[in-house]
Length: 144
Image (tube, rainbow, N blue to C red; front, side, top):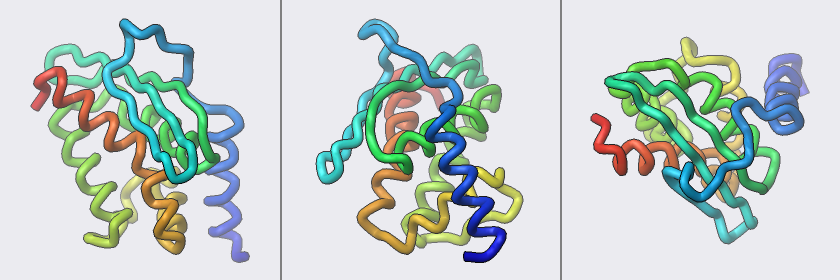
C-alpha cells in the first residue's frame, strides 16, 4: 500500500470512528431514509435549507465503515453550500463512483478517498447511499 492509499484509508476510518454531523434524529426530523439490503446499511438523513443554501445535513443509522464514513464526509463538505452547487456535486460524485466521469482532483480529500471503493462494485452502493438520500431530501423540499 502506498502512502496515498494509506492516507485515504485513514480518512475513511477517521470519519467512521468519529462521524461528523451524526446525531439521533426524531421521526419529525427525517427528510429521507435509505438502505442497502445487500449489506444491511441503514441511513436516516435530515437536511435544512435556508433560501438557496444548505444550512445543515444531519444523519444517523448503522452500517459498514464505507456507508457511515461517506455520510460523514458528505455532510461535512456540503453543509453551507448553495443548493444548486450541492445538486451538481451530488450528480458529479455519483457519476464518478459509477465510472461515468473522472474524479476531480479539486474535490476534498475525503471524496477522493472513496474512489478506491470503485474496485469493489458491490460497495459502490454503500459509498453513494447518503448521496442518493440527500438528493431525495432536496427533492422533497422542492429545492432546485
